[in-house]
Image 1 (cartoon, rainbow, N blue to C red):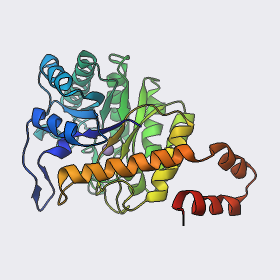
Image 2 (cartoon, helix red, strand yellow; image 1 turned 60 degrees about the vertical axis):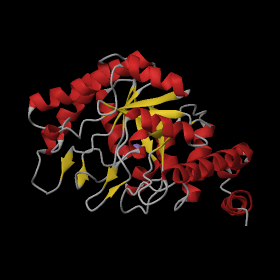
Image 3 (cartoon, rainbow, N blue to C red; image 1 turned 135 degrees about the vertical axis):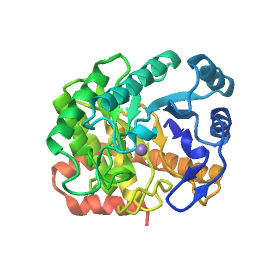
Image 4 (cartoon, rainbow, N blue to C red; image 1 turned 90 degrees about the vertical axis):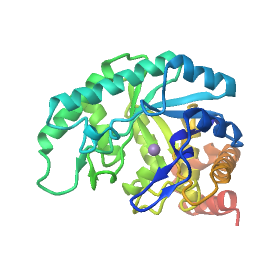
Length: 319
Ligand SMILES: [Mn+2]
């Protein structure tokens, strides 16, 4: 199991009420990744954490770290705060597409495998706020243009139900999958964030399988929450069995990308928080690798629910 982290969570984070931890340079964040037992991969935000590809790759090599993904941020810049890829103003949409294209250039230059983008500011707060027709058409067009550029660097889209808009445009894995089907570019995929999927009232494992069976790739973000908001808790702290089931099916499909931690330490010690996340994630991965998947799938085919529940009790919960 390859584990990585979105390094933005190693610096200062904030919510509506508080700021947590101290600001850090990209190099300081990378030094922290190196200290966290279980992590050797990095997801870095473009353009806010990047400098020249040469300088960043020098840091990565010096610290012996590997690339999980480049995260194209199309929400943080003040002009993107009310939205970017779906906005009615073409100049803003074009600027957002350009950021994704430049993120792909950066990924290629540093040797990162793909770009992921979570268009959180696209959506709406009130009813009668946006024109759903133009918003959907704009999204198909902008994502299509970004996907077509530099096809050797695939583009992954990350859906989420809520935040920063009250209702995000890509509010579920299913909606993002529908968008990718409309775009029709095979060099695309879904960034399946376990917590986002839970917040959308989905089953993450089922959405992994649905996406892959629909012919689109998947990149996994790990965390947990209470399903009401995207709290970015440590993995397994609320939805242990969902995490086990997701990794069970990831293994069935031969998932070989990084499992990237999208979790926020907030009041917890940063290193301890991520080490506990890495530990439970690896523990679940090792557990899943001990399960006889053929036996489980045979019982599913036979609709033997009682025996399956017994196996979950004995082999997964182990009580
Ligand atoms: Mn995520």
